[in-house]
Length: 159
Image (cartoon, rainbow, N blue to C red; front, top):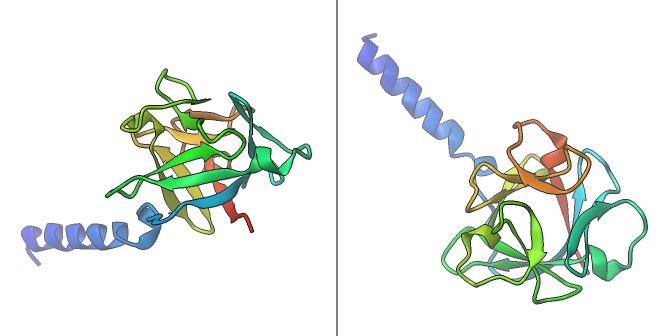
């Protein structure tokens, strides 16, 4: 086999391996009310308390644990809105993860929900190497390594 055919075969294998559904963001077509539970620290949920966003394993009021995943038109991205105060969204406009009011077109408030086995990783659309995680003890948006459970989330659709 010639070198040219070997390279072509490797490229085809790479493309087909990367096109499995687990490498693409989920497409969300309608708003969903959800909870986000961390894989690494089971029982640790993303919670909002007015303009603060953190994680907690302590029983919180249900509304603090509820989030609205809002699809972004014509994209495989979402905005994540607080159920407690529906004018507040997760964003990284000022360089760090915040819960606050946004302008509709901000890429810093748009997220890709990416399948990772039975869990998802939540990747920022503006800071493309940043994911929601609790690796350093608090909720943040930062670069992560591929296997970090601290950056993997179970999404539970609220009933």
